[in-house]
Image 1 (cartoon, rainbow, N blue to C red):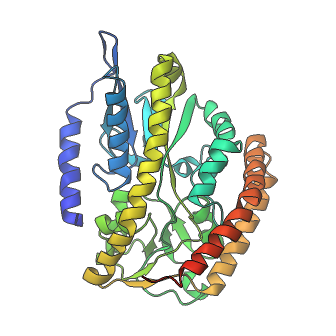
Image 2 (image 1 turned 135 degrees about the horizontal axis):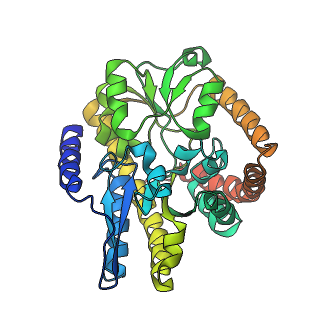
Image 3 (image 1 turned 180 degrees about the vertical axis):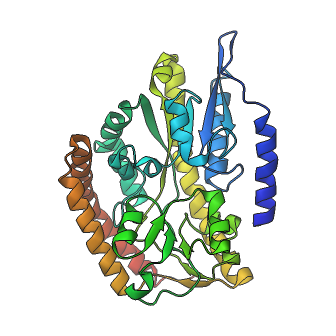
Length: 363
């Protein structure tokens, strides 16, 4: 889908959805919940995944719980989606936890950490190594419950109007990149900001931004970044993955019958796997389109001095989080680091060794 078609579809979706801003209805035992998202309507992978998740819940409950989706800007601005659940305007939100690090820095761990866990490692930590319990503690402060709902895999490093040849090129660079990764870039000299998906292209086009990182080829192709930037760094040390979340009003969730609570949990887990597969299949196809049809210049990695400076900054940030005055942030960091040091032993031996060996196999 080209950017013009994508934006046209988004606009049509916005018009259609805007007519349905009704309060939750309870009739004959059926309930309607509103899901607000941070993604444009029909957005590849993420927006489509949010809609599919809602449809699965509706179907699996035979309409006992109908989920109505309001995409970015249809009910609230995209970066106010979580607030809409907190204030009761909606019952659900779909987005990424690091968008809300102003509420708790600990939430950044539940999206992705610079130089941190791969997507597979992240899911293992959340599900089996204490991550979910800490996530629950953080969101409980706001009356919320969070669930993993997808993962993009390793993200691209970003789009740049000019080639980045070394750390000097980063100084003062106006760069859209969020989360702890954004803090890393800021510490090594960039001027960092966060914008919602639908705002990035215009900021690049008008010169308000020099560079932007969003997700990867699948999403970036749809957003049309190649029209204003030609240098594409295809691997990110700042975001080794992006785990998405479904967040629900905890009190309302607990009022649901236990079978419907279980359906929500199970649908989120199934959708996590489907989103991950969607990105794994479509990122390389989109990258080929960017290179072959749009003459994008790709770079496999950033220069060594940038990677080294980034790693040093990431280590500094992690040490600060491990010593945080906030007990929950500190415990989350400690648990995450402990899990990473267990998980990386397998990844860096078996998985890395296999990938290096596979380079010799070219059928």
